[in-house]
Image 1 (cartoon, one colour):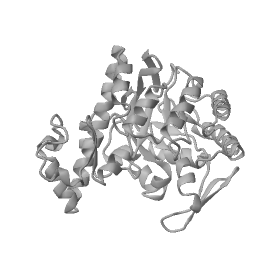
Image 2 (cartoon, helix red, strand yellow):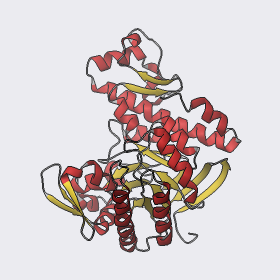
Image 3 (tube, rainbow, N blue to C red):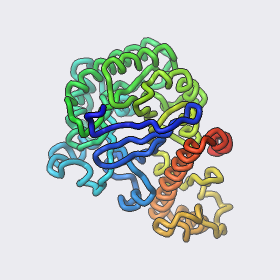
Length: 371
């Protein structure tokens, strides 16, 4: 990939845990990396400038939702999502494959045509083919583009999973052809196969034959137990190319991330920091804090005395408890910002410990803290 503007450098390893660096025209992404989710072109409830202050280096947008709103015409007018939302760092976009599963009652699969949706907004028919998905992601001007895949629901039925692999492999080939030779962007393949080692390996090997800039594990974080997810990663992650980024889609809690880093995964995304923030749940170095709990009513301590973004360290748990009970939107905003800040601090500590060869001690200290 030396002729590409996108590159990945594996700096060092501590057992399976990997420290790396992704280079893109819009900036560096230190790995292991967490990507806050900005499905609609916004990380819910948080100003873009504040996202930057958390040391976030990349965010995630969603092809399906951005196709519906604002649509390709407006995205093209603004020359992509970066200018539209005032974000000048890298963006990765999901391909719409997850919505094939999460909005399954609104769509059906056709191998040739792609996913045929009835819009969940107005019922309008939308055909999201592999080619269309790439076209939309290019209109978004994504720095990392994902192939369209079929993400099946949690199942033990190997026939369903094998079909998803065949569909996804076919769509991956078509996605790469449509992507072309754009040296400023990267295209990632997505492996399926559920919790079956043989199917995962089959899917990975088929994707390697096509050759992508990075590889993702899809079809996990769909309801399986954490131990089952980590077991399949332990059995199959090493089949992914060592010299390219490894991305576990839709994960997760800090413990999920820590466990997956321990199996050699480099990239993560999840709505959990902001979704939890909207329900009054904060992540801290002492574990989860449910700020709805009455025991915090008179608590004068902040969630993190070191976080001065928006002066978060000046707001007490008691005040946050009051905002939640008063249904004030600022509760969601402050707690969501805190959670993104915590996640990024958590990733920095993971990186430091891999660099120092102390990751296993860090892992043992924190793996059960967020259960």
